[in-house]
Image (tube, rainbow, N blue to C red; front, side, top):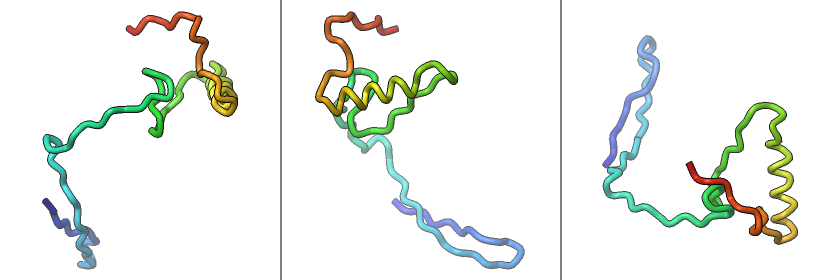
Length: 85
């Protein structure tokens, strides 16, 4: 399914055709997600660490990098996880 749009300057008449491909979302199949840290960080996908300035975002990421580089778990398995709300 393709649509062609005319994009350009209406005053000068300098138009270019640009092709867009449209997909029917009903036909797209979901894929299982591999987790780096379930259910917080998916493996191989973009993750945003957001928070107020000074709340420890950089410390969290540096700690994660250090643990991953030493093949350590990202969390202490003996420490209980916070409840999922």
